[in-house]
Image (cartoon, rainbow, N blue to C red; front, side):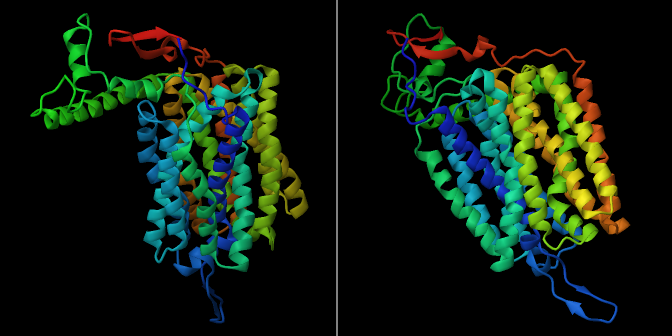
Length: 499
């Protein structure tokens, strides 16, 4: 049997690099909007009645801390709506074209943020940024998992997820510099310019095949069939006939409109039915659910750290360069911690049980160091302990996503990644940023706020520790469905062949 041709230019390493750069730019945007240079501060007046004007987004639009926190979470609206849609469409559409569509939306939305004239306009643009991200997050990790060397799968995932903390950290520095020397709007315009080539790339590249899905070419072939074998049953013949447009032998001149509508409705109903079945499989999988619950608690803290960290550091320790300080520490610890987590899991043996051991242990130790760091009065003591804590908590990035990919069958991986990402945002960093803003407005003490927030790391460690004792099976190599690809035999009959 002839296999679909693999593009020669697309080596696994090049694929990894491209996805890493896209992921990096996406998270640079997250860091930039949280930086003091872009986010800025609200105007204030002292006891003598002397007022200073605000800076950045918060100052220009006169936002409260709650409204400011909402901006960091607005992208979740688009991500929540679009993630399951893109994950489902991946079964019937070219994944790289879907990525191209999403990144195009992301590019225009980022440019719109730079052109915002009100709080609501920039909030809507942030929602559209989430739509763009949705096309990418559910497909990138499965592609990397398919193409990585067997002994280095977790390490490759670590390199990809290393771009999250690194991108956020670079965003702090980027936003601080651009906002300080130019204007906060230029930061968003620069991001849009950087993402544009990758949006175009998604439309022009010849794609690789994702394991667990039939080639797009084979699906297109079915639409050109004009005859059906007499051996096919009536329902199969009817389905094939409906795929033939005007000019084929299966429809008459007065039927195309009815046929098109019925096929369209049937396809939508089939996709909804398939989505419900796939979701049920995920929700009854105890290993997957425990992993996501732990990830939610973990991301609740990380999300608030990434958004409020520079501002908290500035107020607690009077850091004059909080953006650069937090950015520098996060870059170093994010790179070392994330890559180390991947290599350690590969060395331990990349199993789901070992992943949970690493997740719970690294998070627990990291929580201790971060908690003690915020208790210290010394800036230098804080930096040292907080850096060690970040090094440990970032070691979880590769293992937690390894579990998401390997606890489900290949065809469910995009949906698994999409639902994991939606869950950790909608229940994790989306509410954490505004809630921490409300907490800070209430207690008016950044040190207390940081300590309360950090304690949630212990909850994440406890949830992941439960996963160590659950029965787990690695389903990533289950080929019962991934190996079935539709073909056409010489008589035009649809058959399935094991590959």
